[in-house]
Image 1: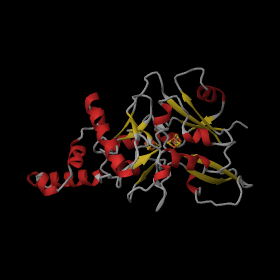
Image 2: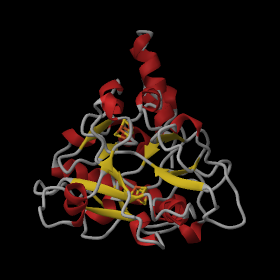
Image 3: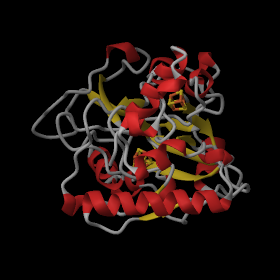
Image 4: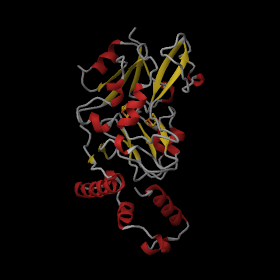
Length: 300
Ligand code: SF4
Ligand code: SF4
């Protein structure tokens, strides 16, 4: 797939230098698909017909690049839903099955480096309040290790997300169902959002992402797990491609201990509401007023 972030950034550089005259298609020597993708509007401003055309173009591009037929959904949010996540710290054993399930489901780059959207941090028993002194490069033979606790951290889908506020081109925003998304075609790779996120919830593609062809997940959402390009920022989307289709996120399904819970915060009968109403829950860095929709609790 063409490196569109680079193209858009080059374009912005030219604009700032007042060099619009240089923007002749001949001088940029782009393919037709590159030019059309470059001129594509912001996803949020596209009409249904424009979205259809952009999806057709992307599916063609992916087919050319990967030799596989992708199905790219643009399914919008259900306004009767506000997604929330629960994590039972008394059950997490630090096995990181969630991490690898997420990598696979969401077409994250596999090597040099492998991009991961979930960090499972290890803490000494009793040091939960000291989050700055955690480590996530632990590598024991067996988990759980005596004397340690584990805390998975990923995008917290803040109600008041600092990452969204700082994006100079509005490439990231909060959807009506609470999922914070990124339009990779619109991202210019400035990484302001990464600096603004207090949870290290975002990662950057320094290199061209690589995925073994046989491991590609071809069921994708435009705002979720479709293959990304070099120089864009990505993050957990609560598996938008799954949850808007009535499925659980991949990490919830993969967790062998049932530590991960997920549901509709607007549904008074949901498990997530039960947890919030009946357990002692806490959220990370509450003092920052980001209002995460990610709730940690201890069931035991
Ligand atoms: S956790 Fe970080 S990336 Fe996620 S919404 Fe909050 S500020 Fe944005
Ligand atoms: S909800 Fe989906 S995208 Fe988010 S961490 Fe879990 S598997 Fe990854």
